[in-house]
Length: 91
Image 1: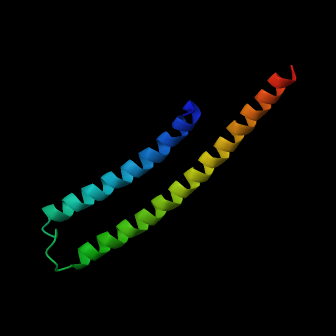
Image 2: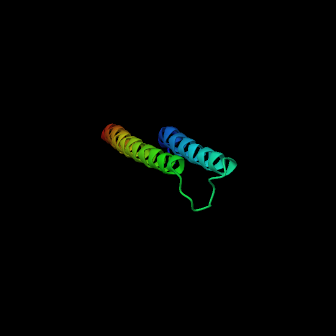
């Protein structure tokens, strides 16, 4: 795989991993507070769930934007390689 593509994928992986860590920390805090899997479903748990849903939506948006940028960069790199090949073949 092209090193430029790998370099562009690093921020995407960082965003996804960061979000997963946040979710894991929320779950750990929930278990620590006794709201783990009881089924009571207090207001605090519902508020946390809604916050997680909002954050997940934001992360999906960021990931979609990063994917668009990656696609754009890949197209630019491909055009550059095609142009380079064309000039080399003309020689």
